[in-house]
Amino acid sequence: MFSSWAARLETADPAWDLAEGERRGARLVVPGDPEWPTQLNDLEDRTPYALWLHGEADLRFSCLRSVAIVGSRAATPYGTHLAAEFGAGLGERGWSIVSGGAYGIDGAAHRGALDGGAPTVVVLACGTDVAYPSAHHDLFAAVRSQGLLVSECPMGVRPIRPRFLIRNRLIAALSRGSLVIEAAVRSGALNTAGHAASLNRVVAAVPGPVASEMSAGCHRLIRQGAAVCVTTPEEMIELVGVMGDDLAPELRGPVLPRDRLDPETRRVLEAMPVRAGAGPAVIATTAGVDLETVLSCLGGLAAAGYVERVAKGWRLRPDRPPRQVTGKPAGGVAGKPAGG
Image (tube, rainbow, N blue to C red; front, top):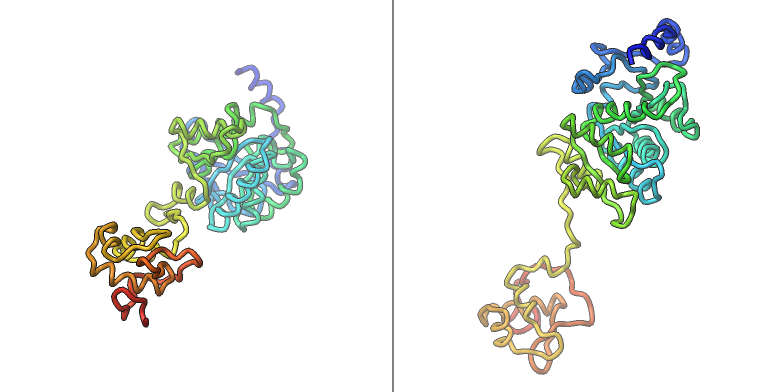
């Protein structure tokens, strides 16, 4: 290994690298510079010596509130849709997106962030002047105007397989947490998740169809407790945001009209027969309340359209949905609709 590095040293030309970087519009930052993200120091002996940056955004500021979104290159429409939705949703809420600029999940997440108006950071395994993959030339041009291209490699360096795995530690270290969207059991995205876990960063995963091989890695992370299951940008923000301030809204089902009834009225309603009518005494026994309570509730339930009087007493009214009223309306006459 020493001989290999020594051979590379003989061909190194730092002055040319700096001049070429300046000519291309890139800049070099090192630890201690104002733009250097101090969270990279968590990498300890794996901390990069310097980073090449190309773009209008400030790297340190862009990564203060950032999420890494990673996943499969051969993503399904389901995965790319979710990546774009998460990128845009996080971006609209002031969170930057860090990813690797690859096909599939990476590219969709970057585009979503751009649509959400947030800076996005592309960590490359090649020089910032090299468009890899080449089809993302226009995407990288958009990123330069609203975010940053980042690399450890100087200008002109082409990507090789080991560099992709090496750069994954930067994706994990720059962000507050990593979100995996579609990853097979063997996936570079899981390598990023492993780096995030070793740095005590949050790791989250989006579940996919249970039979999908493209989501098998996500499901394994969740099943092993190595990742938190998330389904919305708000849930991801809750994991990486400020404790107590960035809580995700609790998901609730639709509020039905009967949910607005007070407990006693709801019990009377649930005791109502569907077809044949029943008298107030029978309803009171079924509901477990006294007769006076039933009589006071029937008027309000009838006025709201929940029940109707029939020859044998009272029953549910099936012909139209009830109006959204709450509890027992005042002025109801016992055993009769209000105003009757």
